[in-house]
Image (cartoon, protein in one colour):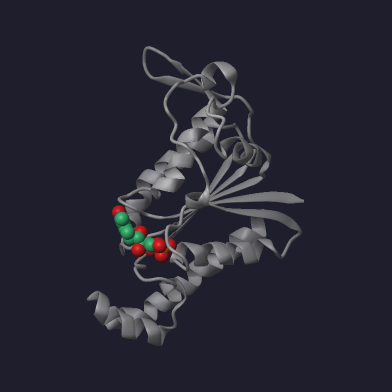
Length: 219
Ligand SMILES: Cc1cc2nc3c(=O)[nH]c(=O)nc-3n(C[C@H](O)[C@H](O)[C@H](O)COP(=O)(O)O)c2cc1C
């Protein structure tokens, strides 16, 4: 049975990120899976303090927070889902805080030309990025995608990255609104209401993409 760990960077309830996750989860539940959902902002995760002791002791030296338990779940998961609204071209702060603690999963050596990263455990995992953007253009998600392209390389030879981006989403649950609801909403967002038809289809497609990915990966 595959283990799925969802690291959810949402900051508001019933946001579009939550809807993407819901569809991914429903797809995954077509198979027999063990799914755990963690809301990053609800965890007690301290900031990485840059002590670099992880390079010597092979784990994070901060002991009085939720990281030890979470890091065990991360290590055990077959599928790691990172879901977040895009905030200033990045994931939200609670999720970034967790990502910084991933430093303790690797040994880092400085060379004359850069850095060499060697993971303590050579992972074979599926990394999933579910990203919700306000912009009509998905390029604001690129810094996050670049980071994860790098992370999946650093953390093992056989990790795979799957990315789903949902664009032009401002208000809660917008991604699942009907065409009529979008037509009513768009003038309030100063958007042309004639976009509603195509956007309804685009949103339905992205939700199906989430469902299908959940179903496919959890086989
Ligand atoms: C602080 C803040 C920063 C944001 N920065 C960006 C951004 O850089 N690019 C973008 O496309 N959308 C940006 N947005 C919009 C959100 O990413 C977008 O509305 C997203 O769909 C919200 O997801 P949610 O419904 O799950 O909360 C920002 C929103 C906030 C509140």
